[in-house]
Amino acid sequence: MDAGSRAIKIALLDTRTRAVVATGSCDQGINQSALASDLLARLLAEQGLDAGSIAATVATGYGRHAVAAADRAVTEITCHATGVYHLHADVAAVIDIGGQDSKFIHLGTNGLVVDFSMNDRCAAGTGRFLEVVAQRLDVPIASLGEHARRADKPASISSMCVVFAESELIGLLASGTSRENIIAGVCRAIAQRIAAMAGRIPAGKIVFTGGVARVAGMRDALAEALRHPVTVASDPCMTGAIGAAIIAARENGGSE
Image 1 (tube, rainbow, N blue to C red):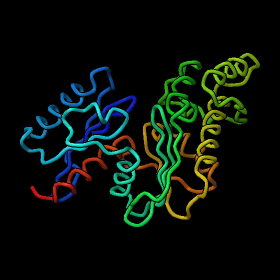
Image 2: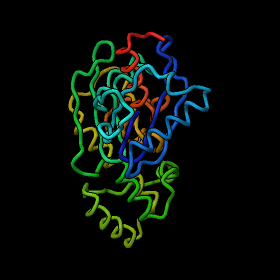
Image 3: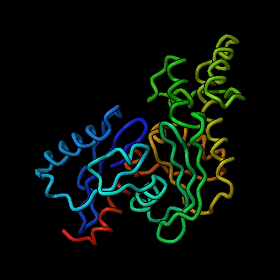
């Protein structure tokens, strides 16, 4: 279970084959434990299973300690690394940008975490920043990438604090800057912040995960800022939950 800041995600994993049986998500809320339990019950029912089918459960994410159904909690750094390595065995680093934080995780042998950098003190460089931009510009967040691709001169966004950046967006609009150029500028500013946070850029594959990975323009902006190709994870919103399930399976010894 990945109890993130914006959504709760659950992955069911076969402990013998390590195959992902099912995944699901729901919006985050006040009663995280009840929401997680309801989502789990629905996933199990859809697979014709019951609670007795579960060998072990690991929770991760911001709300990991609030999930009563979990046997134990593991940090999202470890779970995202494990989940991405399961999906992309040749990964050298993970960029995870969620609703309230962003991370650059360096991986070593067998997907183990070697080092990481994390921004969790400010919404700048996170999904929340993009939400503010989408709301201010009256653009669906799912189409931000499409708008960014149409930009001909990305705006320079100097304020990386969300509060001040919103004022800067208003000023850019008043000066006649197009929404496309503003959005492209925001994507570039976020990517440059990630690049500065990353430090040494590994030679191997960099995999992009988290909800922001679904914004098409962000992958291109990150690749430009890092001067390195970036691959979007095959299931970017579920890597934390999948990693948690793999850790639960390992601790259970892989038995049925």
